Structures are given as C-alpha cells and as structure tokens.
Length: 282
Image 1 (cartoon, rainbow, N blue to C red):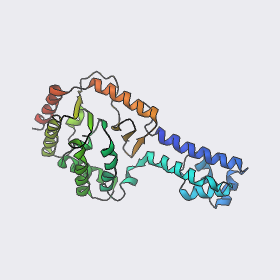
Image 2 (image 1 turned 90 degrees about the vertical axis):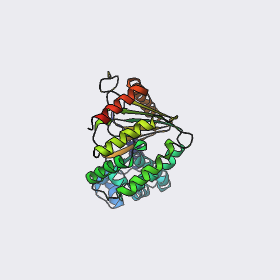
Image 3 (image 1 turned 30 degrees about the vertical axis):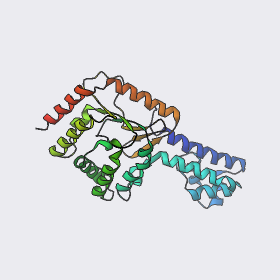
Image 4 (image 1 turned 180 degrees about the horizontal axis):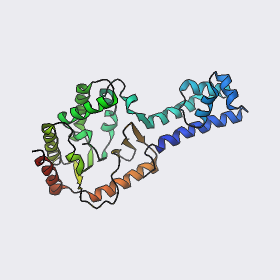
C-alpha cells in the first residue's frame, strides 16, 4: 500500500506548487520580489512554492499576474481545486452539519455498478440501521464539535441506502470481526444492527464477508475504504476523507481488497460469527 493514503492529493498539490515555481523562475523574480508585488509576507511565497500552504484562487491569480502569466491562472486554479478535492478535512466538509455530506455522495453511489467496501472500525454506512447510525454520528459530532444535525443526517444516510435493494448494483463487503464486537450505541442498537447484517446477507446482489480474529493475516488491518467501480477509492481517516483517483493507487487498493477477501469467511461461517456477537450482548 502507499506510504500514505493522501499521497495522490499531496502529489497533486506539489504539481501545482512546481508550476507556480516555474512561473517565478521564468519571470526572473525572487520569492521576496513576488511577495512585494502581491502585497504579502515573503514567507507566504516560500510556503506556496514548497507545497506547504495550498494557495487560494486569489493567491494564484496574484501570482500569475505578478509573473506576467495571467493567462495561465484559470488552468492552475482548476488544478488546485482538483488537488483540494482529493483530501478533504471532515470539519471542513461537515462545518454546517453532517446531512449535506450524506446527500452529496448520492450521485456517485447511484452511478456505481460494483462496490467493494472494506470496514475495519464500524459497519459500512450503507448497511447501518437508524439506531446504530444515530449513536455513531452523535459521537462524531461531539468529537468534531460540528453543528448537531444528527437526526437529519441519519435520515439522509438511510435514504441513500436504497442502492442496496434497487438498481443494477453489486456489493462485495468485507468487515473485520472486531466491527461486530465494538459497542456503537447500547445493546438494543447493536442487536438491531447485527440482526440487519444477517438479513442483508440474503440479498442476491450482496456478498458480505467477515474476517475472523483467528484468520492468519496475509495483510494487516487497513483504514476503511470504499471502491467505486475502478474509478475512485474513498478512504476514511480520522481527520479527513481522501479521494484516490490515480489508476496505480486504485489498483493497489484492489489488490489489497483481494487479499483481505481471501481471509474472510462467508455464508454459514459468517452468520455464526454474527450470531455469536449477538449472543455476547447478553
């Protein structure tokens, strides 16, 4: 796997920074001279050139104008926005609450034909029950300190889950056994969630595998990720979501998913693990 799931985003940012640096050199300017023309501190020029501070649209326009290359501003702004979309902080994405973030992914979900999902920490969103989702989103809202619209966000999450039962979609879902044991919400919420997993397993277009605690590890537990056909991978980190679009990295996640799938159990064995987890609730 890549050294960091945000590597594509960082490479894209560095590419923008490199193009800005080239403009500076072509104009025969120093960073200090450019800062003077743009009206900002010299250290800002250095941070932007070295990819440490993502430039704003206005920064890029000022930079290009100072270098006599204003005609390149639009292309650079577009490239910079693409880089920003690859790595999005949850606090930024959910600054007005979580509902909008649930709704924004619906078009991508509806056009995807083959979902491959690996979950190492919580039940995948498309399989969550209202009780489980409410407990999870409440804890996220509290941790992040973002506006509390949990009820609306849960409704939106339940609404987008229609893809499980409708449309021409196929789902290959893998969860670590630990996901069955982590107590998200009270015993009633967990029992309802685990029971729903048993029901989902009967759906014809859904394959749900569980990686047992005792499985010999061919690959270590990874961060949760969602693969949308072979077009994009959404990786869930603590502070941010990473959208991987580089074909080479998508292929790496595909290979990782295959190795994880080889360790998973399905059918009766998976149901036995889920039932055991239900029994442990007391």
